[in-house]
Length: 133
Image (cartoon, rainbow, N blue to C red; front, top):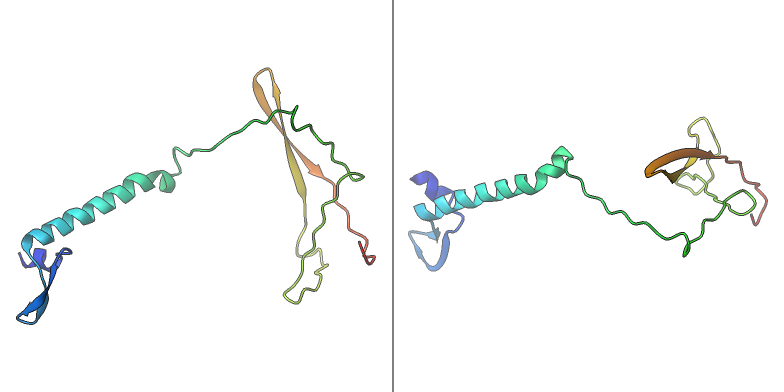
């Protein structure tokens, strides 16, 4: 019975201290504390098991009409994507021994009700280091 009193989470605080004790703990409070603890662990397991086991994953999918958003043919004359890798002093790191950048895009097509995925590499080239570019 001392165990239940010890773990009583619901101990009532009263203004009049009895024997120097600020919280009055009971057996019933200890039992309810155990029930509450078990309930919290059970709920955490029930709602978290899909995350831990990586099952029943949910995702959202949306198909946009190509009439509203026509496809754009991207090529080097119409589209530029630039980036640079800098050190902590904002100096360009231009040493390809440490990294290699490859950019890919995925193209999805629907043929006879089957979705086909293609992965193609976008060719990259180094930028000119002229001022203003």
